[in-house]
Amino acid sequence: MGRTQRPQQRAPEVDFTRNMVIGVFIGTRPNGCYSTEVTDVYRENGAITVVRTDWEPGPQAVCTLALVNPAHLVVVPRSDEPVEFSSQVQVLK
Image 1 (tube, helix red, strand yellow):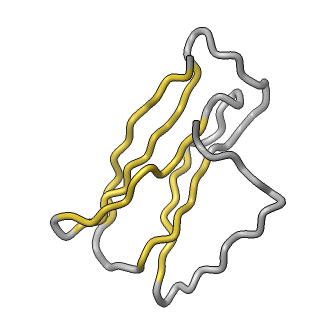
Image 2 (cartoon, one colour; image 1 turned 180 degrees about the vertical axis):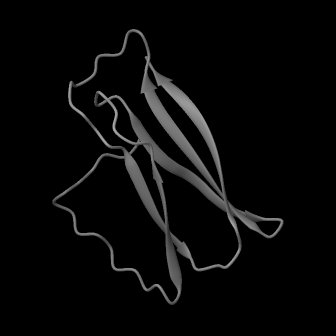
């Protein structure tokens, strides 16, 4: 499953002269079975491709009842290349 929020963990320091941050967000969802994660970042044909995986509950999934706002941030080397996103959905059983 995707990464969980860890509020006790300090955010990493980012040197924005050498790096940039890429984030994926799926907005507010009704339960804890929803998640998102950057699963790959690669450069190809003059662009940066960010692959994200979103998880959602299947019909038999047991989920916590809480509003969640899934997000995932990653630090990558700085670039002026355009950023493109590709996504896939996984269903929890």
